[in-house]
Image (cartoon, helix red, strand yellow):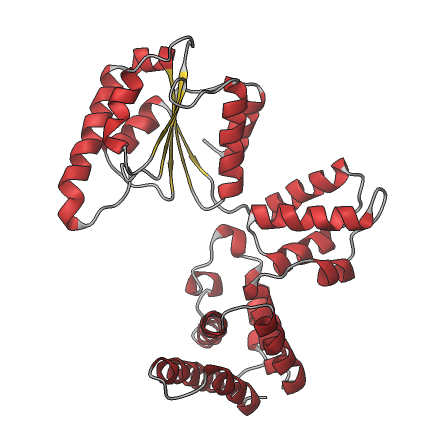
Length: 338
């Protein structure tokens, strides 16, 4: 089941007895759970609303069988319980046994469950096991993956329209490139811009630069742009700004390394006529990054990127062994290649 189809059904207050929700887009996932709770109406913890986690996962069957006194149905949310989690080899058997036990119970008692229980499993990722197969057969499985830019823009545009604030396609694209693809972050940032512009206002790129919080990857992209343009003043200014905003220096180092590594992969892919998106292992919602990476990679030679990457590795090693101040070391690398 797609997120779109799930949202349509919830709008019609149509529920299935068993769901398995998983994926990275936690904002939409939690929003779906909120809508299901709203459809249920009054929920009393321990009576018609039960939360299952890692500490009480073994009691799931008992909770399903316990009557919801005074209510026709109960809602059970099984969140990151470990039941549907890949376990270490030492724990695999016990976990597999629990999965099979719950799977068999659901199959044998599905008619009763349909009448008495709303069961929602929430996991970070989907694994193949008997229980997953049973849920797919008797319930609905929904993957809340990161939305593609086109879908993000559609949702953000709808929010702007709701508040009668104007924004064009290019500005929305810039907004996503600046703030990332995390829906919760985008919602928070677009609301900030809507409040700033007011009714009948228009969101502009300069407003995004002035008001929105750029994700670290976006700011590292800007820093790398200045590095590629050999503008040491702006590159160092951006580094100082990151530190001023309390970004951990090691996180900056790792993010810069990962970003430059992507540019290095782009250069190699071009030299050997390989598909860039496949070489970078981009997801469907990240394809717009290919053009950005290609354009930025033009600032550097392959050999130069290889040398910078090695220097960043050496800096990380020397810092961890107390041989260098990481701030001074990173500034020195930026100066050396500007």
